[in-house]
Length: 463
Image (cartoon, rainbow, N blue to C red; front, top):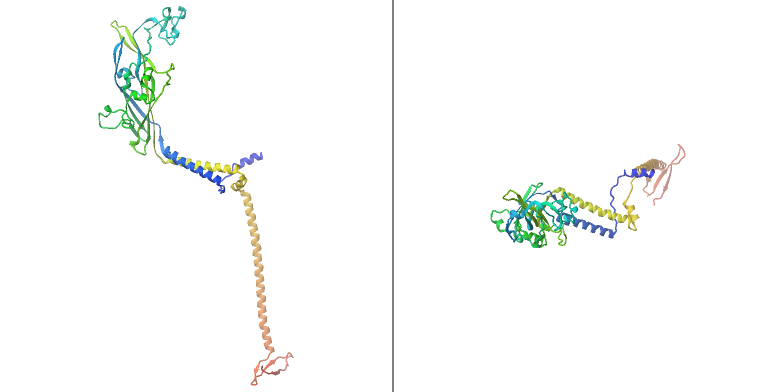
């Protein structure tokens, strides 16, 4: 419990930085190299390559519509000549973002409602007796409903359906070989709502014949959105005639990367092309096809139809975009991330010095210092008391010294007063010196004989 309480109390402590200079060249070189790497990353990658100083918008508003042109003539021994226009081979014909172009087909004409044998290509339609063809059952992956009778000549069940059922093989060569030269006009409008920026992939020109005479070229005509179908397929790395026989799927990507700091003219579309379906000729799932029918009525008012199983190329137009413009917020965020990475380098170097060096204990003692405010206050108080005592002793010493000086001064004054008195007494005891013409002098000495003392005069020769 004491350890737990100590841990909880330690969470309330405040930690601050203390800078310690560790004179270790290996760690210093490592830290400087890391700083240079972070600086290169921030400048080279974040700011130059990724333009981290810009505010980005990836929510692009876009509109695409298409229009195909071209004709193809087919000649079949059974069906004769047939002229294919865009209204025949483009599905749907209204020019959407996804469109399909017919390149090959199987035609089953003059189908009428009736009874006929199921195709021998349908496994669920095969039979050996009537018991295999239960009446009312729908043929799985077939063309109609079983009548309960097995037709021995074909070894298939009789069905009620549009007869005759489709049975012809797929042509090995595409019937619409001329579709390679068809052209598609792809018009794309984009808008970035955050920056109120709009643009189109069509050249803004006053020449009405420009679009009639140009085809797309990334160098000479980047703003001519007219493409040959053959080029679209070849740019994916595939052969058009091979794809046209079985069908396939091609993706057209229009990408807008707009640096709005550079201006309107620098925002240009970039096209890329790829095949979206799996290109495995040996696979049963290779290619792309579907069926549709055209219905007619004869003179008697009976309905009949022509069934088409069409093979072709599906084109998916996809639009992506991103716009960027300078903003102070992402700039500060990028700079802040750089400083954070710098701090990570300092942390790593600290870990090396603290736990991976022989001198880790020395560095740890120099780096970490614990300050206990209670102990510091107690030390401060003890120090203050000691200073007060020292000052008191100094003051007492100074006071005794002053008193001693005063006493010495008084003594000297008394001595100085005593010396003149003694001199005066000596003068009083000596008489005046009287000069004589003979060069001698005399002194009158006082004799201590009382009040009736007599003066004695002695003469001495003057030396």
